Image 1 (cartoon, rainbow, N blue to C red):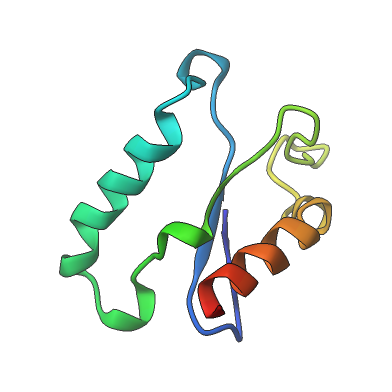
Image 2 (image 1 turned 30 degrees about the horizontal axis):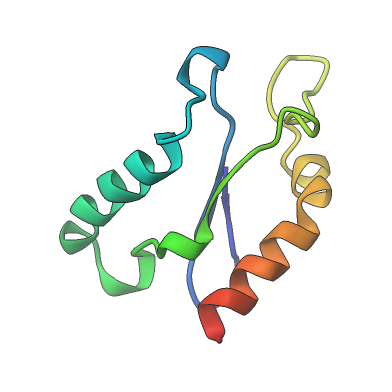
Length: 90
């Protein structure tokens, strides 16, 4: 899920399947995004600090239809998102 409307840069919160969770997956995702950044306009390029992984203890909130409730899910990660932007702007 993409976040950051009105912020200096977009970020992404990813929920991974259980089979994808390993110690290196975050680094692999960051490297993949870095490889794509040159193809994107500057204003949509992703910074490493803003690539977040959802915690199993705070899974994405789903609607009755089974789609992601973005507002409720992002509310679970407000502190993580604020911290990520603080690291980016430091």
